[in-house]
Length: 315
Image (tube, rainbow, N blue to C red; front, side, top):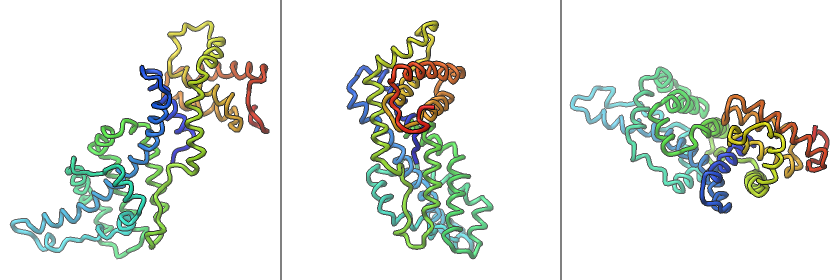
């Protein structure tokens, strides 16, 4: 699921797009921000669908083998145990998954070779042979082979990587979130009764997370000049063009949290943006941002502009 750091990254990306765009209508960019969150769930549905495509290819492969000019005994009596896999059977009865397929118009006909290639790799795997030969028939053993397909075949498939990169621009950033959602799905699907098996939730409290997301985005833009003045006052010895745009946006977002989010501890805010800077800015950004924010924070405290209420939220 999306945690607060990942939500901050979504806001950072939206602010970058806003700054680069000639269209300064905040509502339009806010809509794109919310769509970027929905894209994570769409990616999740597409990945579940690909797993199912690989499993269902077992039946296609069996038919192709049976139609060979000189089929062997094994070709005429294929082991189709995986098509009865309890995880997949339960997934195909899940209302939310089925609704997702319809909503996002999931259809793999544009690349029929992908499922075929992954299934053929599965056929050669000792883990798959062991699964077919095993007499165990539990939800756990069925989940284990699906985990193998996802972790060892799909995630390591160059072709699958390419498809998701082309379809989802945020794939490199959201890939870890996707893996967490799939892992949560494996955990959730633990019941024999399909109705009890639930998809992973993108957010535990979307009302609260949405408010955080939208408010951080709106306020960072609305008070841009004020935040810039605070930063400029502490970077007088720096040429403006030498300060990375990403660093400036990260500092403005942090200041926004200092001044507009009473319940978020200062230390949490600083640590979050320092961690984000490691991934999205320059090697020296971490120490630079930390130093400037420390000075800005000191000024805000002195001028009673730090909106924090509660023990441990300021220090």
